[in-house]
Amino acid sequence: MARFIMYILFFVIINAVALMQFTAAQTVHVVGDDLGWIVPQNGATAYSNWAASKRFLVGDILVFNFTTNEHDVLQVPKASFDECSDDNPIGNMLINGPANVTLNSTGEQYYICTIGRHCELGQRLAITVSATSSSPLPAPSPTTPTTPSPTSNDCTPAPTSGPTAGSIPAPDATPNSSSSSSVLATLLLSMFPIFIGLIF
Image 1 (cartoon, rainbow, N blue to C red):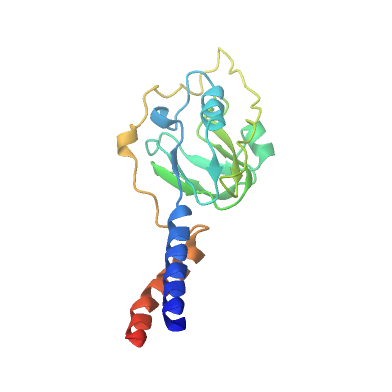
Image 2 (tube, helix red, strand yellow; image 1 turned 90 degrees about the vertical axis):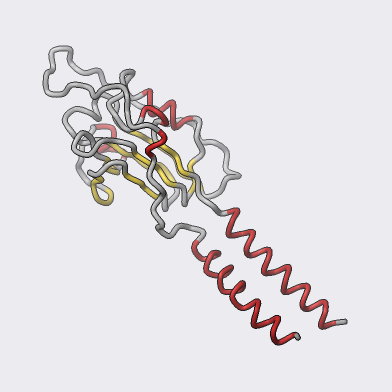
């Protein structure tokens, strides 16, 4: 009887670990939804309003839908974000669209387009990344709107139509915060036939 209880306990543990793997799945966020990653007509409020209704967690993926050579994506610190400057970049500039970014740390994160005056015209995103889904939705970060000079000729806003949601690439298979539970679940599941063979 004790042996039977041990078998049941082992089976329950394997199932619990497998469920942990699936509950830690990431969410794919298409930045701006159907708008894509472009110079928005209504300025920086387009992306701040979009982000305000989302919950971003470690392991989630941001998809920046843009046309290569028309836009780019660069993560920067807050001071560079506020000034629309590419000083002190965090990581590499993403120049090929669409681009995926896996969120791998908590806290405020800032992204801009460095082409022309795109950032000044509103092509920038500020988000707050939480560790767990039980965290409350963060208050939207205030974005200081910048008003371009009406006589400025150094940048024409991109068209309002961006790549469609149907052209979203598959997320990169990069490791995220659930990778350790995936390894443990795979190990335990692969040991299950051996354990069963020892029983019978």
